[in-house]
Length: 233
Image (cartoon, rainbow, N blue to C red):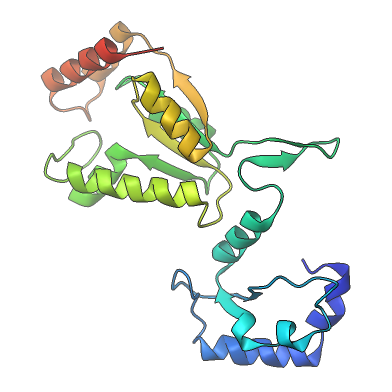
């Protein structure tokens, strides 16, 4: 929404003409992600000091066509609420988390927890689902050939979340992370909150036995054993 000092400018004939011409010059495509564009953005933000300066407001060198997600992400980075901060009811900047790392043993219920708690359009990063998408397998069946690709895809997604490159309301990371140092490093990197699904070993084995999507039961029991051997609370 335009600030009060900019409303007159955004309603002006000069801006509308410039905006439409620039939009058409970019063929309606976001200059960052190549999706359909919707916002002609000022790279140098408009302010009371420059709102009457056409070299800032109408100069094509200061314009950029963005989709709504990229536009929101840029303004979020520039706002005082970036980097995990938000204003509380007293107007004070306090820590806020919108990235959640849901960790625990295999078959502990991590993905089920995320499905029950996420909003419809939240981002979810789950290695099992990435691997399944790359190999067209279903459920917990994992293609070992696809795993290295899946790990690189997950790393790319971590980078995008770390940079807050695109706007998202919340992101959920599903991972094992039995080693404390690895958990804490990922928390710092993503500015995230930890949610531990603290299901004991016997219950995990029971669930793996009953889960028809987990085909190789012997292998499933081994990775559960291995997880609890490495677990550091």
